[in-house]
Image (cartoon, rainbow over all chains, first blue to last red):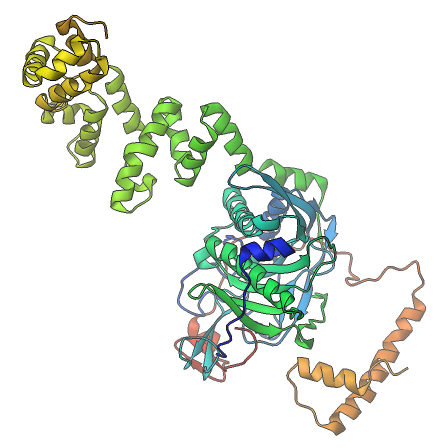
Length: 504
Length: 98
């Protein structure tokens, strides 16, 4: 590889001089059972070239037949993106010669996509909402997978030959294309990430894609161009491919803004080209320039008849749409009464669904949050797993909370009870029994412990007598220690003041 | 006349990765030009009231239910391959897109 290190400008300086214009093409692999045009299974990870039919291999004489579920999933994506659905549309052949497509064309849509003219409101982390206009979402098929052999790093440079697996060839894809996104300014990288995250969340929520970016279920090409501040004419854009994690999308857009700014600052022209993102160096390298190889000579696919939609069909599909994720969050936040920060933390920790389930099981919103964001998150961090994988069920939380409410255990003991339950020692009640964890509520032993603690710290006792009630914490601590945490701290406090004859 | 000239044929040949000699380019340009001209007569016959038609048969929504059908075995899939390795088709490394 030619090791050209591109000059870049600092992001801040780039932002002082230029306004970025973004555009995204996101490919979503649908999780239908079969492929777009053949009955071969749509699977991941099978032995190479076993999930293939003659149609996928482009063998002579085969005829494609459209998968109805893929069309319906595509319409559902369009509806979720507030798109219009075409009354009639057809497929087109995109002609190019490369071994990932044995037919020598990709079956796609060109002039009239099934979904068009939509929008998506993207909420940034601080709550600012940015509307992204959707140009189109069209149906197409995925290509086979090439592995380059003999090169140093599996890259094509220096490769001696390539091996092709067509299991992925023909997997249904929906390509979602935005209109140019203007006005994001310095928030462009953040918006890029949030946009792709929103698409991923929507298709996952619809159940039409597994939406796993690491498997390539959601893939993003990011277009970036700059225009000098105060101007409105778009600059020349680059298209960065291979940005397949949310973090990469943000970084790639940021890098390209900085690179374009340096090129423009040097008085040069940006080359219209494909760029490749490299997560290791956090930079892009030049792919190939746009050339006459991009002359795809689209024409209507003669082997497939048009797809015609009716209002009834569209409404039936609209009826299948789940509540949009953004609206659901808004509803839950209001219902639970969490602050912005609290709710954001809950979402980021990935425990929103778990809290919803816990509340449904009978806990209050506050208790559910306390458990999931506190003890369970702590354990998850320790075990390096997601909180939902710690093994605590909503029902268990409700049970523990009931025991706390009844005064049988306190929060500290509840954590020990949880230890026991997770260790397989039985139900919370059984663990309390076996471990002898019940709160000491009989005042007798408590008074003994209080007297001992007061005697051990006479200076503190004096302070309390003198009205410094906050000093009581030290005595409470001593009592809790003496009772191995099994005392009710509130009751201990009351008894201390009673003992010393002061008002708490 | 002359919709298809020599340069157009050379361009198409490049896109299709087909090597053609000068003599072949000249011959093809002539032959394709005749074909395009012949097809043009359709345009003359259709008036402005006839929309561009890609699918002349009045048939729409020919769908397949999403049910898995037969697949080829790996051996069958590779049986027509000029070369293969590790259960996959083996092709020359082509410098195009990474």
